[in-house]
Image (tube, rainbow, N blue to C red):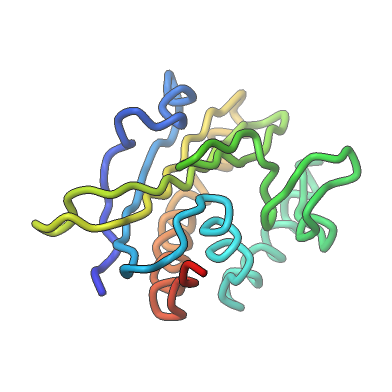
Length: 177
């Protein structure tokens, strides 16, 4: 199975609509085994709803820290399929849009807004045509708090995204039925 690769924001992806003037923009790609599910919603659920224990520990630390600044925290309720306002959620993330091959999720807060895309594609990967997914993130900071927060979490963000993709590869992506 192929390794996780850092790539550019995919051309034609809906996440690119959010990429103007952002403070962080990155994307990571991994090959899917033949016969894997292709639904971006199911792929996102598979990746984000089975985070490693150390990631969950980091999220608890983050939540304790950001409460002091009145930022949004993650709760057990975030792992249900809809929030108290009826918005669909996957893991910690609110779903903003879902089309055939891409789901856009994220959150808005007074310090920053972020969006995450899970995009399914078929195409070149390591010199051969294969199905793959690309997880892209864009972050727009609104103020100094947002920029300082992003500076602090940026190294963790990259490690967590790559770890989540590697974990999904090791656990084996679900197969088409």
